[in-house]
Length: 463
Image 1: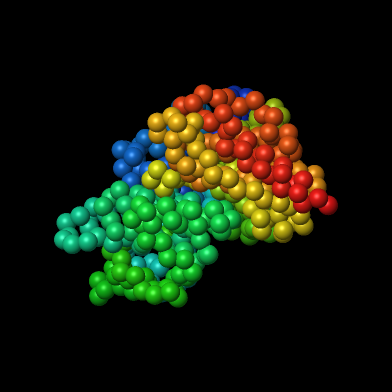
Image 2: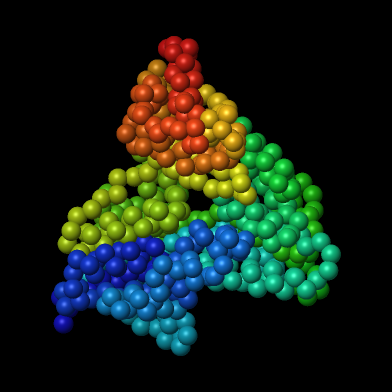
């Protein structure tokens, strides 16, 4: 008999990474691992769904890193289509519902990992549940959307897609719909698309999307969705007007899925995510860990917690949790808020703080924006790139970087992410020994050009 039992709630990145790492460290006779997953799939890339829908990824299974069978071969008792409906912290047990049979039962635990992920924001508006309105959070969601698109192929005339939301998922799904041959309208309630950027950089994204044939409407909060007599979507109504639609894709964002944890009295932060210590242990609970999209993480630049739903973080959380559960040691110190995306050939990247983030935490700052190219200007194929840099007044400490461009623009943000993590000043950045050759960069890399201009802004601002 196993001496301890680990129960994992959630079978995607954080949950199964934790289970797999714990198994590497402890054999079955020392640690029994039971994992519950309410869906049909485990260990898949939700971030890849827009590229599968758009046709860049051919098969759904290409997004699956490890199947349920592969997890079971590693001595993990993985129970699919089984949802944990209640958590008894004092009694150290969870109540599970088998969605296929309808059976419910309790399972005890010595150690617990909560990896319940996030849920798509779906406003309670008329028509949101109509046929033809799709979220894209899970592989099941992606398949449902593709089935809907296939059904529309048999029709004649223009096929119209409306994407609600202009964040990462929104712009990626706009590209996917464009590739599928749809006339695409993006409805954005904000000032510019990509609210994770400052508005001046978001404007560059807007202009590029227009140039690609994607209509972007700002200040367009959705009020309702209209349907035909069969209950299928026909139009999307906003404060700015009404837009015809054969299919609607929701890209409004996600929220931490913490209803189960809240009901059990576990601590949550200002953004709705579970609060953990550096070891990813739930605050105040010795034998409960949490990771992935259901937690809040420390922003190393702002000094506050925030909610960021990214597979990169979820997998790291899982590794840390599994190490600690398995008798090893690991910590997750926090993030600087790095993210990249694209819409067709336009690349979008950001890390650190936006201007409003800096103001919110009481930082005084300067900014500088430069235009450059991703290669030497004389080298064939050089494309424009805009870099915006934010630095703290007087100290010159780097606070954030945003990049919009083509030709390798996005991954340049990694230099800034390292600089932020190291607490570098913009002046220190100007001396970074970055790789140079005409096919890859000008003599002065765009990030370094921005750093030089920001140094001048810091000096010019004085005290």
